[in-house]
Image (tube, rainbow, N blue to C red; front, side, top):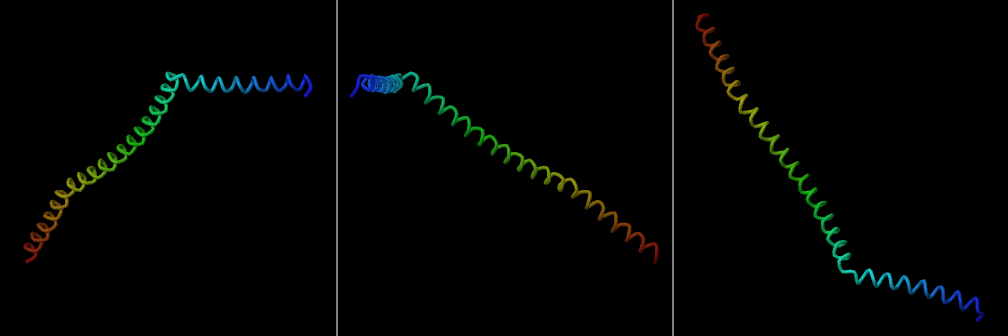
Length: 99
């Protein structure tokens, strides 16, 4: 090997060694790893909470719609009975007058 080749090899080795040292330093930095893990957990929890919130809103809207429809039916029921009584009463009065 020539001197320039040896110098290039030394430079490549230094670069790889520097990368390895950086990786080891990152693994040794427990605080930073804990923060990163906490951020991941927080992001997942937020995502799940958003899904659950949407699901609850959908269910609430569905139940609310059912209740409103039920209330409309309950409100219309007396009106239908009153209309029926009015029609039957009118028919009875009309027949009595006719005879």
